Amino acid sequence: MQLLERTCAQGVALIRDFVDTEFMESANVDLRRERADLDAWLLTIMEEYQNSTWHTNLHFSYEP
Image (cartoon, rainbow, N blue to C red; front, top):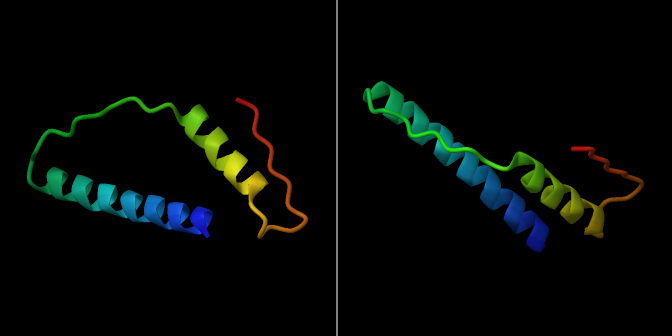
């Protein structure tokens, strides 16, 4: 259940980021961009899915 909650929270955060970005662009506000370590984020997500008990016959792989 923790994986589901975390995934939902991440989805909500993405939607909020999208709405915030759209608002800032429409309000002519400069957007502050930051670098993100997508490799580390993706590896974490992959590990969570691999360790979850709800998937069956699924295999995930990622090579940074």
